[in-house]
Image 1 (cartoon, one colour):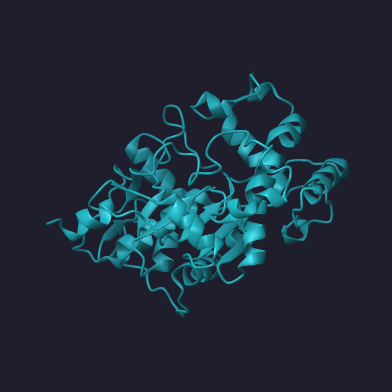
Image 2 (image 1 turned 90 degrees about the horizontal axis):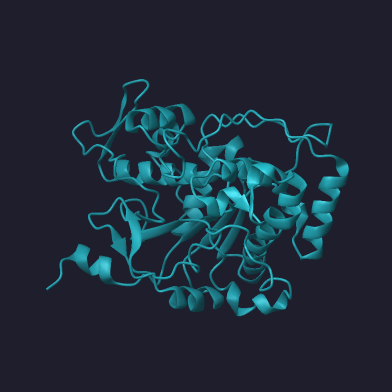
Length: 345
């Protein structure tokens, strides 16, 4: 007879909350926060590498940063009624049932791998799991597709960023990526590719392809799928993450007792201290001792023509650009610096 853990490990996930992000829209911040929250909810402890303070039960099991690799499955039973949650990049489950309504969709490739983690992997029998006594669990993607298409699946959400800021951040991220699948674009080093070519030839179509899947599913099943702007997450992480947790868990809790500690521990300065301790980036994508977390102080310039052309192309593909949070500055050519004190992109 199998133990419960072995049974859960071998049973394909048919009811799986999905927290998807467009690349460089808070993916790792959300992974850290949910992981820290679940660990604390299970009675664990996390030592703040900067202040020395202990969050959680002082006699609890320490958080294992050495093992932490970013899922994409996270064991959340102590926090939610589900065993696992998916946190990463993916096309919305269920969208395949009516993707044909968008003639451009199937003809548009993603410019790098990783935008569609639930559908592009060769095998789902051994999906990596964080925070569990086992390392892998199977996912039944066809079952997720059928349930979501019918509006019966677990809740899903997409965290997205305004497309120009997202493209600028991802451009910089991919240039320094250890994998040439990211650091090269159309056979050339990405560092040598003009940003406009990267934006219109790769980043923007990929953004639209992922975004439209959630936009269309949210229109079809508004209670099942939610879209959340990254800029609102950065402005008020406590409120927005609590709302996301309520949506994904199907509850209406007024508070999440350990959430404040989890968010504080996921601040950039603390995670960089953890990286210094480990001698590597937490996400494993940087060469040497580099970090995937940026300072967040930037001032990329986009003239009106670039922004207007981006909006025109997105609207032509059916993307609702009214959902984007653009710069609040008077100079609409500038994407103002985001001081991401608590958020790793």
